Amino acid sequence: MQTDARVGVVVEGGGGQRGLSSGHGSVSIDKLSLQQQQQQKLQNQSQIGTVSQLIAGGVAGALSKTCTAPLARLTILFQVQGMHNDAATMMKANIWREASRIISEEGFRAFWKGNLVTIAHRLPYSSVNFYAYENYKKLLHVIPGVQSRGESMSANLCVDFVAGGLAGITAASATYPLDLVRTRLAAQTNVMYYRGIGHALQTICRDEGVLGLYKGLGATLLGVGPSIAISFSVYETLRSYWQLQRPHDSTVLVSLACGSLSGIASSTATFPLDLVRRRKQLEGVGGRARVYTTGLFGIFKHIVRNEGFRGLYRGILPEYYKVVPGVGICFMTYETLKMLLADMNSEL
Image 1 (spheres, rainbow, N blue to C red):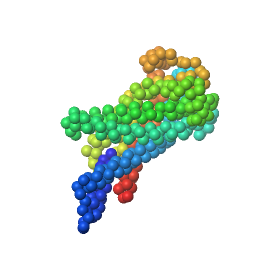
Image 2: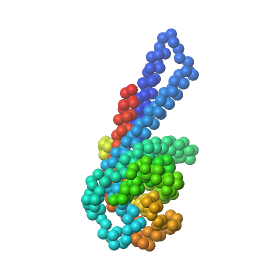
Image 3: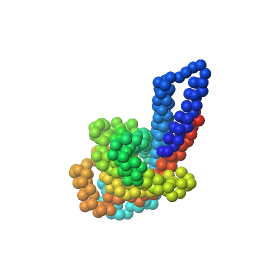
């Protein structure tokens, strides 16, 4: 995030030297023309930064999701068990037994079931998320009250929290239908009701209407704001503290460690909402009767009554296994790609 500023200085310095060279001799450049050239250079720098953020964010999200796809599918399968399974079946479930069942009944490749739509969803989601986060932070820093607080730790933490939440809501709303399709494809076991992304979208629109593509959006927006806000604010706080105490440590190491810890914190805080979201997304699949006929809080009460409080955290273990490498890879890749792209742009 500091790389953009560094690249901006390099590009601006180079531009200034070219301007002075062209002005040496009989040709004079008036003040207005020089200001216009500087404005154009600043616009070009902004575009370079935007492209770097979009590419870095999209690739980081897609790579981390692909690496952790098997654990992500296990999480989804555990989360939705309580919808149609009896208590005895749920008590027998564990990660290794479910993983063995997938291999024996569906094959090893089934661990990546729905991964194509995951990438199709994650590329725009991560791009919008990271880009919106950077720009929301800029907008928030312009607010007079925030500006007057200067560089205080509390002001920066508040900005990171709010910007992260707004970025998560923006990205989730823009890409939600793909997230719903991904859940339905990943939750399929032996019965293949959807044959792919296009068929799933077409079938959902036909059987459930266009609004069927947005089932569970309320729970998603309730969860994604706090989740991303906690993730970004914890990440930024830990990274700032780490760099203050150990400024010479590798950026990659710092990003990996802080990203992993921020992922654990956000997942723990918002997992019950994520579980409800998954179950809402699967309501009515294949013509099945609705399980939940109440609102969000009614669903929470239904789960606690029938599955106990632990039912709200069904699938949290594979989620923990997934989130440490997943979020770590995502942040690490994002920071690394941003530096590489910035260095490439600075040489152009």
